[in-house]
Length: 253
Image (cartoon, rainbow, N blue to C red):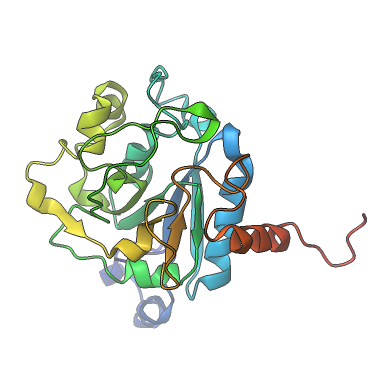
């Protein structure tokens, strides 16, 4: 699951002392987060919540459309509610189709150690997700975006990706494939390649009842930073994390 350090070369070409250091070092966890100008604060608070619980180093990559313009120029769809609705599927490409990576929507709050999620990675699968089976209660969600209904709804909002087995997700394919083909994982040869993650790692706030054991709270209907969603479950935890994310010793007011 871990990658060799940049420039380290093949293990057989390195001295034993360097190989021992590699084996003892904590692997870096690669986390790709959807970034949307509609909810910038969400990205930063999610990063803060992950950092606060992480027992291993974490490397964050924002899935930000302007930074992808050299490889990805898909026209926006009226049906998409976030800027990263489709670009999320570039994660394996951005990871060089090696190792395991986590993609996660920005409208979430980590309440547990993300290393525990990576520990669930199983090489039998190309991707691992929380397999929700529900019908959204709303027809409209945050900022008056339509609440789409389709099979495998919200499966792609948290994806633990075995990048080498996601080679079908080239920039060209992601740019042209239908939204349903992407979000329903039709790019896989067999649905058996989709592994299960416990629902606690993508707990749908407002769709599922409050649960103290939720590992990641997903504000799928609307984050507590949007009007009308300030009293959502876990909103107080989100605001407390936001306060810590903007804290500084000796800060000038």
